[in-house]
Length: 577
Image (cartoon, rainbow, N blue to C red; front, top):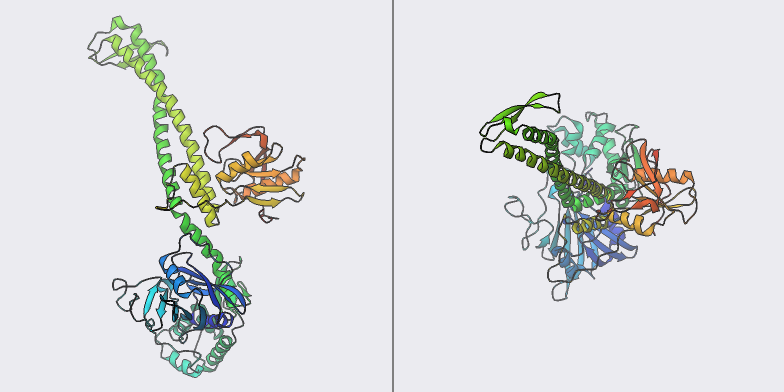
């Protein structure tokens, strides 16, 4: 799943053909490990993504440019100052190393034209993007490497740029297959694919396994290995088979510049029109979700801590409530003492009295020797009244705690389904309003105007009715309480966190088939989406109310019916208005 030197060789040839001479219009740094260059050239406008994320380092043209932060990082501002308005003059690669050079003409601090180079090093967690001046000195980099990080190679401003240490491997583009065969015979590694991986420059594990597979997992037959190496070089020369490998479920598992047959018929090869489209298809969705996960990490932690704290508090309150269940015994002891004051002497540690509430069985009652019998009786009555009051208070606290726990579950569900940074921002604002997180501040600046919230999800039923689904609690409130009208139908999964779903009826009668489809959509937008026979309550919107002081998304309803459905496909999703 790594971008190897051979695939990079073909990718850079493709980028050079499309981007050479293109003008740099904008530069963004969406995350700490990514840069996006917006370029315009003879082939049109393109966005060039450079990523040194440890799990997916790469460089390619993308159609899925990440969302940009409101404030650009320092490196991004430096690149804008030096390169925006300049041109991309050349793209190259040293041999088949996993290093890409992008040569630009830009401007220095005085506004004079200057040459710059960006080196993109694709080496897993050691990947880096380095800005170099015309003299070969490092200006800055995404990751600065000092003596504490490495004793071999330092990446710091002002230092001379040098390539990463080279391995003793052969370049297939420069060495004949016979020379590679002889080299492999000297390898100490017995497994053919690993022997080839340690000997062939720029080859990835999947390519080495494929060559070994085609050779019958043996390199002893010289003609066969030479034939396969020649075929490998032919694929490397042509570069016309950008291939994604998908497992039996259709999930992308790897990619290469050649067809992959080592998995037999179980895995599928999908050929893309170019290498940028291949990498974009392979990485884009996974990286987007990873960025969202990072953005939401602090909210998850806050909510998980709040959920744990409330659950512990509820446990203590339930235990105290159980103790209050014995309050009647306190009242009975007080009454028995009052009825038998003449039989008890002051200073007794206890007494036994017939319990006329339990068939006159003797009941042992503990006494405080300091008090008179009447005072002991009053003490039992006082403890009884305290227990009654505590029970009422505990019931209120438990109800409030359970409601807050239910609210936190709905926010966690909304957070799990948030698929854009704007969705995360809306949930963050909601939690700030409820006091769970601090509202963001911009010191010394006027607060920026908040971006308009995302619209609800929108679907169209087979009968032509619009079905709207809230994205988060605040939108659920807006959709149900402000946008929907009395005869619109409101749906929600019973007993699970989920989104408010509304069928817009425009006063017309809604067919049962549409209600069933809306119930299936409501089930998909709930925590019960992986279950079968999910109960979904539905009623007219006019029957849905919000209690005073209730948290966002929390409502009560009456006059409802329940459907049992299996979550269905999200069919007929329309463009959001």
